[in-house]
Image (cartoon, rainbow, N blue to C red; front, side):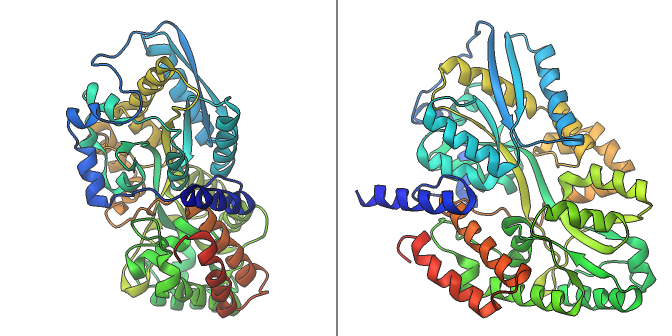
Amino acid sequence: MKKQICRLSALTLTVMMVGSLTGCAGSWGTKEAAKTQAAGTQAAGDQASGKAPGTEAKTADPITITLWHSRGAGAQLAEMQRVVDAFNETNDKGITVTEEYVGNNNEVYSKLATAIAAGDNCQIALLGFTTVGELAAEGVLADIKPYALRDGFDLDNLLPCFNPGLFYEDQMVAMPYIRSASVLYYNKDMFQEVGCEEIPADIQEYTEILRAIRDKTGKAGVSFFAQMDFIQGAWIKSINQIGDISEDGLTPVSFEDGSMKEVMDWWLAGVKEGTIMKYTSTDASNNILSAFYSGELASVPSSCGNMATIFKNCKETGVNVGVTQIPGFRGKATSSTGGSNMVIVGANNSEEQIEASWEFLQFLLSDEQMIQNSINTGYVPVTYSAGENKDMQAFWAENENYKYAYDTLEVALETYPSPYLAAWQGTMKNMYDNVILDESMTVEEGMEYLKGMEGTIFPGK
């Protein structure tokens, strides 16, 4: 009974804060444990809970499956439609995939959670990687590992930096797909104007350059919004090497160890002195990028998944754009992983629908499709073989910035999954908005607010 009370309490908090479902904590593995799971044997797959697939893939009658996703207009939507069309035209198993753009990651999650409860959900979904754990805790996602082991899909071919978000207890509940690293886009001319040819790795040295840009041009050096796991998370990870949440998903690390406050102090100081442009309450990302495209902003941390679009817009507006790692605290450049994973929804779906979804998922992760996805958008290939492929290497040779994003994965850290993460991130966003956007709280008051919410969200605190 106590566990059920915990589940409902977290669910209520998350719905109020970010419009998504939350469950009680499960047994989250470490990165090393995740790697071990990825290299599991056929015997482990046979013992996985739920419906285990047969020893041979089924040849199904014609079947249609639906994909819900967050890849909207422009290059992202075009790539999603391209790969769906390619699968529909080439597969010989009678499978037709229909894709439906739902909205951003939170909107996909909310629609999926609601539809599962109503028994009217899709078969496969593209979810923000930090929300996969919440559905996994509810037991509604299919275990992918037995299918992969049966069909000889090489799980060791997946880049291990993404492993923490793929597993829940003894199941593999997701596959990486449109994955990214946070990078810094910068206006080369504005930095060169103050004598900076290379962005420093240290945040304090970077701040001094931003002050020089402000003094010389009257313009802000950088802007970003409250994107906890990806932007603020990159800086926090440069301090504590963990992020906001502990490996077991039970503790808000960055709040307790002071790293969040350190980032907040730097952020607020930059806003007050004019080196950091304050984000807006609505459409923050587009407004920040528009300022960058127009030459009113010197740099912006963002996803490498936006690279194709950012380069295109900078070319149109005449901005000489460069890409580098994000300057970090403690003297080292930093990055955080981001993007979305593919999940197969087990709830309310037949074995045939799950099999068809697995066929499509394998197609997405083939070298050819991974390479096209990366070239067309900027998202990184998620497998070793795609990164080593001659076509990928040839593209990188002519487009060094895209290769730079892939190399950044060596220092990028994944946010540890937790069924409490969405509720805690919603709470942190409220705090950031109050401190930075509205200035209705001081940093110290923001920390007190989090202290008051910590015990409500994390059982045992």
